[in-house]
Length: 542
Image (cartoon, rainbow, N blue to C red):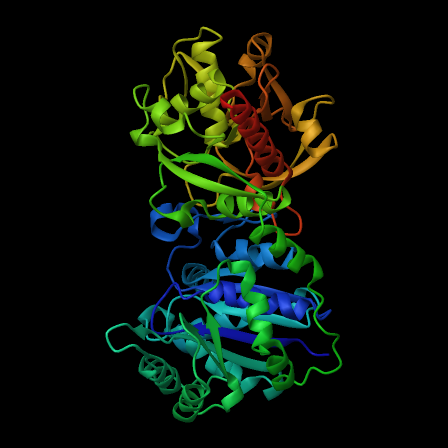
């Protein structure tokens, strides 16, 4: 079977859920034994999201091969349970960078380089690239932004050309729109969808399916109206209702027979019915927890949930694995100090100190680590969260009062956290951190060994600073152990305390590899420790 290409475009408004819809459709096709991958084309001019503030675009998701990508790639991996690569996320910046580099090399033989055909040809080449490097039955391509955005026009034009160039049965265009409910009128409105489709048609692209995001069920008569005015068959108008969880969307789409309609339109025959037993079992545990726990997420981007998207999803996976509902309490690290820490963390059953960059909010992370350590509350520090736990321990237990990280204090006398040696020679910021999957060797008998059940793991990284190995002997003599290290560099990957029920910090980002079907082991163990802490507290107060 030739590779089939599905293009997903959005209209009316952003944040409708193109990524979730794409991942859900891919899940349904994968469950029918088709090999599927998803790629995201982002219209912004940044080469990648690595230099973007999380407030701008949510978290930066890191792939196993070290690409800094859009957070939607996290959804793709979580739904499909397979890795993506740097080829799965392309930006306008990368497209233009590639074209300009070739122009400088003289590849275009002196011709005037233009958006059409040179930019659109490069977009099309990237859209088809995955089919040339690996065998896939279906490749889903999500176009970021909305139809009508100036920056999206070259991508829409590329889709128009591919719709013409590819065999009809090998190319499918899905348009996701909003059907809003007006409370004053007490009715759904299809006009925004009609206008959005008309704008898409004006750009030369005719959608094959129109998917309507809605708060309320769309009557059949209204679906026929959308089909009539948007020039599609009635069965090609599909509703996606708001769901309790994003993981419910594949089942809702299956009830709408969206996968069957896609298969029929693309001429894919004789596939088995989708096998979603494991997925349904996960949802059953998710929706029927036996207990709940309260966990503080201490960070400086807490106003925007997408800034910690993978962490939040990892708690959902780990909660379901423990048949437990994890209630997240956002604690802004800038507003946390010695005076209010007991008020903000005293009722928590676990404390997670989140990753981040820069000086803002660091003191609050140190305060949180100390409070969790001294009050025996389960603690989990990720990247900068782990580093601040080490700084706190050095100051308050090891007696190194001036201990700090050179990220905050470049000329500090006691650099217990320091810039990695290979980072000291770098002048540029974008794409130069320690990125992607690296091996970690774990000490036998440690908490980390108990969590993973093995002595060698591989986790993903995104950092420039590390624990200064000069201080590790003193740190371990004082009771904080480096239980995980990189075998090639000696980089400290995991620290833990032996005189604490659950205290662990990791230099890597474990949240990036958690999925519903394979929840991340540290998150699972952390939630279990929070449950046990709650039981002890309840028994103490009984």
